[in-house]
Image (tube, rainbow, N blue to C red; front, side):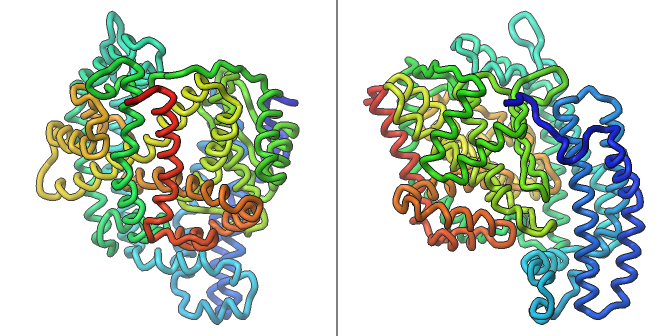
Length: 586
């Protein structure tokens, strides 16, 4: 089993003649698109639409392949200057295609007889959902001159404010004991095994925000007001309605999910109360101990043992899943170990048109690394389900993106629990619930915070004290009495980058959706058994060309009603109750 991935299916290397040839073809892509556009305008409706779609396929297919290889190469060779130069060159070429890409999309947005065109041509029929969505998007587009001006000015406004915030938070040095650390280094100490270290790091972090709180507050106010003003001009009712449109989600679905969450939160808080008791706290769990370990799961895995464990686990679910995992381990899909120049963290990357994916991880032999691979291979499984979709039909929305990956984590967690002793069960439940309740309780606090900021920032410039108060109130509403009121996190608004995008608002509720949708699917699996699997695979296949609600209908559930979400939350609640039982809470 190779411990590094192979990218040969794309190109043999940066000096591969085919890579160089494709870069040269890509350099002429803007002219190609313009030529195809001019040709299309002279054709009848069917052939015009077909010509434009095929031209876009050519562009997206080549762009995706070149960027996939270059970005994946850099992910494990981040210090390669030649590769960085090629990445920048590809980005410049791609930006040169933006204008004609927009013109083509606007032309496709003028279609008024789509049903008729779909009846006449199978290619257009395959792209019906994409074309319908594009028509709706075009209704929210301003004139070419206005869109160009917004794009140019955003680089000096919203995006610049976001970059400024990133620069401030990543470069400022904060005082910790007798040394200076970055914000990231301080926050990483939250996972330290020593409680004194965790507490000291938390206190240093909170004190450190004073160094740049006003600068970051200016960033947040200006970004949010820009989003509001541009959204109004594009005809969106609110920033939330724009976010829901981009998520292909109805407001009724969001309300049903959030309503069920608020209904269950008081019961779910027992996890934090039990953890506080287990760690010896009497006034609730202090923020600095949210990630403190309880219990112990000491088993270590080699990469071979990890492969065998995952295949054995998921063979009880689906041979399609276990076969894909075997293929990934045995056929050089995975890059396992940390090394100089390699990115941290983990991700999955679909190799469009090949039926394969690539998975980056930084494997350390602990169960968390096994869980991470299960998660990323869940993404790869989703990739496999859409392999037969046409090139332009490979995008699914952020809320649905974590479905297969989180389902895998849930499945693996319950499998591991069945083999564990009580001490290991506490550790596994602690890890799982910490992550789950971040997606339920903490994400809800962030949703409440962002909603309040959008409401208030139009009438008042929100200074750091205002933002601190809004954040603390949001945390009190969600965490309630489960946290120690002396040790909450009033600066979470400055800490999280998700608030600082001029293009993507409410980068919070999709996390809650992803977790609870997958938990609800797991509840269906427990009920339906083998009959669930093919239905699940078909639903994943269709995620690229349907709404969130249609994904639910494919599984026989109505996501606009709270019952599904309650069933999802019951799965989490059972884990909370088991943790409380094992730690002798109450």
